[in-house]
Image (cartoon, rainbow, N blue to C red):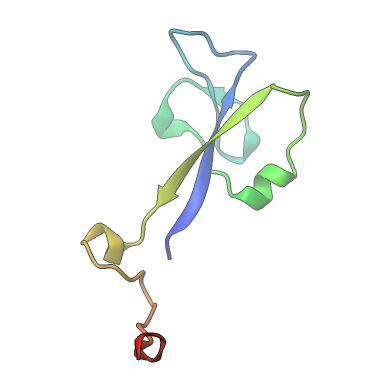
Amino acid sequence: MCQRVYFVQCTKRSTLEQKVWWAADRRGYTEDMNEAGRYTGAELDQCAGAYGDWIAHPHWDQCASRLQGFLMCDGEQLDLRKYI
C-alpha cells in the first residue's frame, strides 16, 4: 500500500548549504538522504524537542502498482457500485 512518510530535518545541525537528517530509528544524524530515516505520522507524534528543533518533510512511498502507472494501490479493488 502507498503511505505518507516523513524525512525529519534537524534544524540545529543543518546549514543553508547542508541539510542534516535524522537517521533511521532516531539513531543519530546523517547528511546523506539515502541513509535518512522514513517516519510515519504516528512515529512523529512520539518525538520530542523544543519548538523548531526539527522539520518533517512529507514524502509518498508508492506501491508497485502505482509505480507502474495504475490508479489503484496493491490489493485495492475498484467498487463500481460507487459510480452507478
